[in-house]
Image 1 (cartoon, one colour):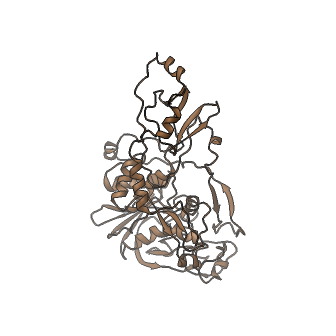
Image 2: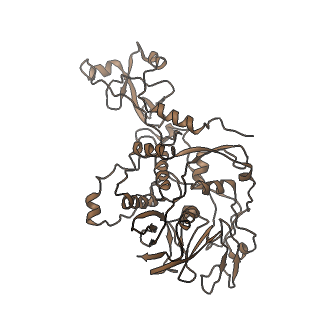
Image 3: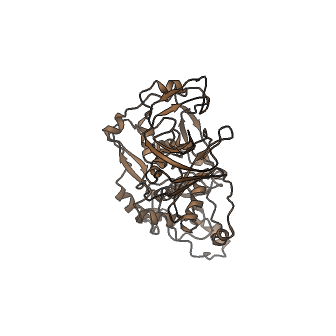
Length: 465
């Protein structure tokens, strides 16, 4: 059995996080290093550092100008060394200020994850910070290609552009002052926000540690549901709520023999005729299966567990701690084409769930106006009919595509009163809200399953532009 010593039980992570909330006290070891020396430690504000950090909580590095910088576990510069005579000469022989008391904030995950270093420090200064390397599979049915091996590409950690949403005067009046820039948030902090929204039925789509359009839509939906403008930068609030409502954002999971056994398929064919020959459109790997189980982007799951062999039972991995499925009775649904979002309301008109969605395209638009839900099918197969659906490749006959999470409609089909249209899952959760569909409303499999548990035949679905 393979284990990884860097993983600890969730309780230990919580304890460690609470311990790190206290101010750092002076360390005798590090303090002795500077006692009687001709250099002093100064904060980034130019004040004398009265509370010397504990040994092991900081690293001393040289920047491009040869200065000795103190960098904490988040790769943030908290101070630097200068000659003692220079400090006192600049301050008239007297210390300027009492220095700042350095505090370590609670990491929302319990797992330290450093953000990007500050601008004055070169990226090359941090050789131990891994670049994001992501495995991609081509599952786009329009390409007509089947990759023979995963393609490794470099993906920059960029924020997606978000289109502003028009607000009513009442919403504008309630709106809180502009929140701090989110570009400085670490992936762990963004993941904590995504987990919090996900647990409360306001889905951010795949949890990937990125502040993108799906998170922005979820924050708008949160405001509609609660009247609260949630500040993504208010990590302390989000962490405290997570701790009170089910635990911190990340936990550990042990891969079981059943997880590793599958069954799996070698790859997902792009051509529908080839799909129809398979017994089941199952997952292609344990990592893909576990990523969906924990509502995660598969590449992010792998990045959190570098070097882990997901095929071995008994291996512990780091995953996000998702909550229970949202429950309630949905009486009406709005499919917002412009926002690429599905919103579900109860009989009182209260928003109880929201999901990022892929809704139609210019070639195969979704319905307009109001339709109703006719039935719900779990683990559905898919009938491909080029005469009434769409033309894919050279396929010109009706095909029966088997069920499975990698099937064209995922694990759920919510049939609508307009023939051939429905709300359904997807084999590509990371594309939800960012691509187009063949006219239907596509959600992640887990969001579609949650919604399916709250609807009944007769529920209205209103398509708005």
